[in-house]
Length: 358
Ligand code: GDP
Ligand code: MN
Image 1 (tube, rainbow, N blue to C red):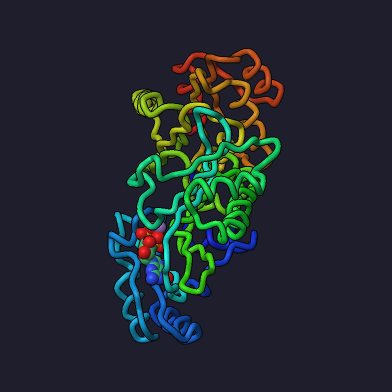
Image 2 (cartoon, protein in one colour):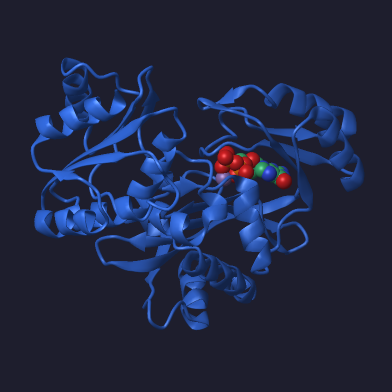
């Protein structure tokens, strides 16, 4: 799962027409002061870290003028909020709050459909809100969220009737983001009713499905490393599935006189794109051979083989593959068709890799 930062989540919501406070991202105290100057009024300075309840952890500060905004940014930048280093702050106009509401679209795993949640008790962790104060509506994924469903849910949550149309617009926008970005969660908490009677998204969370993000929204997936990876000193690249098997592979390479260059565990259910990224990652190291050791269970050997052959154009390091388990014959066939030596015996594969590593 990839949790977008607040400012990224808000951009997606703004594109769909959800009102967001005026503001901008700052990487230095000076930038924060300049943004506050432009806003020309009280602001909020907010740590951009991928965790919730920043307010309680001191990650949301108020400032009345540019000088205070600079100080707030100085305090936050470089500090840690819930274990995450703050590299950016969002400086936004401060909203006058009448009420704080909650609205989200998430996936109901039990029912296997999206669900719209609305509560009049926003601004706190939704887990702390009593069940009967949260209105829920399951969404037919074929039809999508419909306007009347959103309005009805708002009324069930005791949102005043005159605000139901505005809440409907927000809920439909959330649903569009949920769909378009393959999200697990799109949440606005708080959705603020201002003193002027407007609805404004003061905070936003968007959690994306990791696999969908890599394939369909790479702009959000670039920076997360999605497999445990440790660099070592040797010249034999190692890729295996499962931490135990990866360790065992490293040990055997050493026993047979080789020097492992890394630890990389692709985990269970590795698909071709993950295998491809794993190989490209190891190929960045100065290795003479890459040893891939897959024991297929949930992971299917044919999928692994497809991933392996997909890198052949980009990687000219010799690949030695040991492949056993689910769909083994198909996997072996795909590899051989592409001229890759495929082993079923681990020791033979390791010997071959050590030999090629010279
Ligand atoms: P979180 O703690 O990470 O969920 O961060 P939020 O952005 O939700 O901020 C926490 C709380 O700070 C909100 O529930 C509000 O009560 C308060 N807050 C945030 N922005 C504003 C603002 O613009 N005006 C006012 N008055 N309060 C704000
Ligand atoms: Mn919040």
